[in-house]
Image (tube, rainbow, N blue to C red; front, side, top):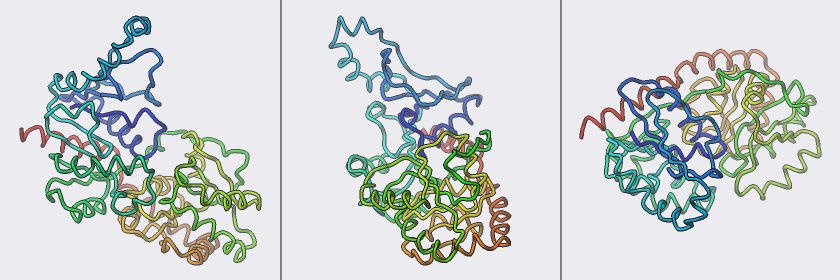
Length: 379
């Protein structure tokens, strides 16, 4: 297997954690060799490195060649030459299957005319393209349709995305396979809460960008505070993303008024502690391909309030309260009810504990390996 590991070279969010966990589960599988290709197989001393240690085991081979700086200084043309021939060298490795875990086949693997398995995490390009980074939108607009057409098998994290790909055309039903994702935080020790976070709070986890719909929470919270004198603050856990300027003033006002706490991107131990102690976890997204914070919240025993979109219904089932994503009054009223009714919170925790058993990284990896093996056997 040739595996593109480029997503592991930047702060890990959904795609990076998905790849990280699949590799970890498969690192010691007998009869399997996972050749890992980063942004370049030629590594100079100052080159970027994966942000987390790569999985290690008998199945793992990280394909890289160290280039000393003094060689590049003496022969400055060498780096460009090696960069140009890299796809041919990858093709010469004669891998049986190519795996592109991040929507499209990277250029380094493009000349390897072997069967392709690609993971399509969502169909944001068709559903909410206005909310994408321009660079990402342009890249997917250019390559996604072509990648789907070339792929021998397509992996999706949900039945919702599978149906969206079928509606868009270009793939046969039996070529698309659903592999749910899972929480990775059970292996993480629970850290202390940041000093700014009180004992009672509501938690949102995710990048602050338009698709996550944080704006509806900023509209709902003044209503919630009018309904509940002791309404807890909202804690935002996640980095600032793209197109956030339109709510920057609202974020600043909410922080100044004392009911919004912005933590940015937090370490795993802190994130685990936040989930474990949250009074409610809120997920107001306009669109998602899966919903990892839902699974992480259910695993931590946190009550869930989610936007009423198909994939959240698929993931959470009866373990969440659902609100239309554009209904600020509905969000305020539902949150007031969940926060003030212990029996409802306990029921959501119980349903979440039952539901989260369906999400397991080992099953995801086993299913992924079965897809790869089927594609290889068909050659």
